[in-house]
Amino acid sequence: MIFFKPRLLETGIHFYVLLAGNLAMALITLASYLMSRKGLASANHNAFIRAVYGSTLSKLMLCVIGIAIYVLVYRPDVSKVTIFLLLSLYLLYTVFETWSLFRLTRLKK
Image (cartoon, rainbow, N blue to C red; front, side, top):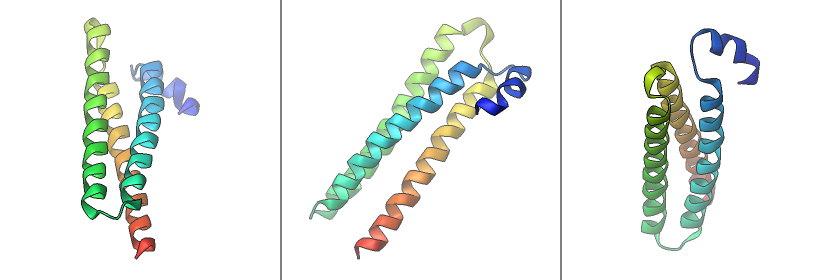
């Protein structure tokens, strides 16, 4: 992302907001991945499903809260492209987390 900084700044994207959002999503995804792996290790299959739903919902809610804070702070000049990129980061991290957990469940069988 740092390599694309000049190009992102040209298009009117708030680079540091995007960088902070990427870092926050990485940390939230790590925590939710560890929570889901703990649920996978449980003997109760429902614990794994609850952990996955809980981690996805908590990630989504934290993403929405982060975007709301961004909108409130930068109210006069909010960049819609920045918001869509932040939501794309959420989607990207969720897909990779789900794919990784899917591989772990296949190996567990």
